[in-house]
Image (cartoon, rainbow, N blue to C red; front, side, top):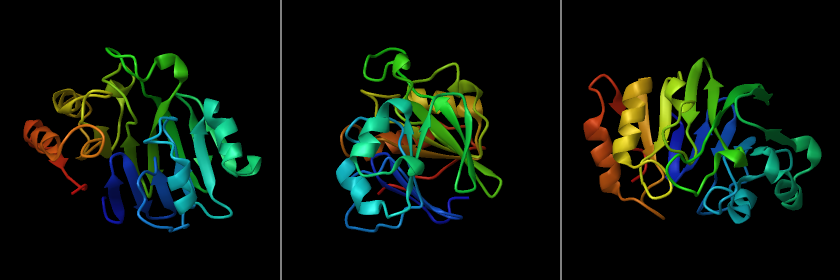
Length: 210
């Protein structure tokens, strides 16, 4: 299920399956310009980075952003026809890929207010559901997630820490859990290791970021 999927840095993910998909491109090392679809969870600089978007987008790339980022996407050179704006708790389709938005917000800190309507995504590819949590704490909404693979922040400070992330993953029971949002701005490799040790034995942990 993780074949042709990379965690590039922090929360930046590349999926090269039916389409070339980037999520929250950040610290991209060179110009690839191969993205069919770019998913953005919210507009903090480590998730919506115009410099890094420019390294992956091409002429007909579709970008998916929360509604409040429409002006930024237009200013970044995307034409209206290639921008899909989203709100939480809705289903969408882009380039033949079905996806659902999940609210992503803090419950015990102020960095990601619920009213901003920022999101995580459940992206379905070849019958496999991939949940990309975005910057979030444990919420009533994400405790109801049904997915096969979950990419979840573990670095703490701005999101869940590894203990909270473990609680969420043990609650929703994906087949595979992948820790993200550590090793660059907040969190360390040890957070990912600690996360892996606390998971239920039937949940496989894959640490993709080295």
